[in-house]
Image (cartoon, rainbow, N blue to C red; front, side, top):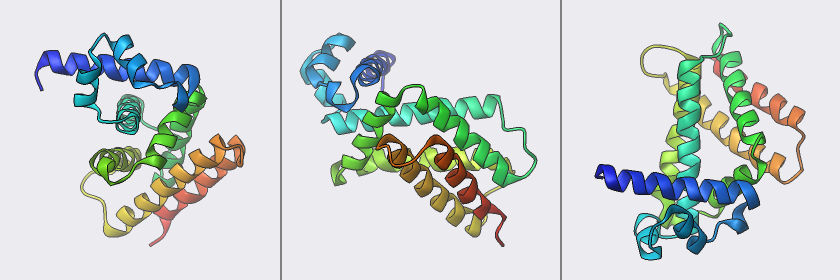
Length: 187
């Protein structure tokens, strides 16, 4: 991707983020995204074939921002489980500040079909890497750590869906994230 294409892509993602933050999933209309990004509608569709592709890319961008924050300000706890719980709680609070944006990204991820599998895999990888960064160990994870990371990742996604749908309180989400992080202490 050239520098010009990368800047165009950033403008598209920024326009979609603004629309989603203002009105959630339904507010993200491809024509309005194109107008906000100052690109032709056809150009937008070359970058992102659907709204789901676009919002999953926004989610990936948000996760990458969270990864940078964790790298700049690592969790203070000494043990891996509390470090992961603190990191995911921080990430959850970041999403909580923009609930309509969070709702739009999670809906897109939930609606994603096989045509979006590469993008969904990138989101999954970024979430897993966020967790691994929080563990703070040097070297590759063990097989049991990889399995725990997958379960924690699923818990994180499920907790987001439950909170966004009003079926879980913030306290319950926090408790679930702490419980899931305890998997890292199992042999």
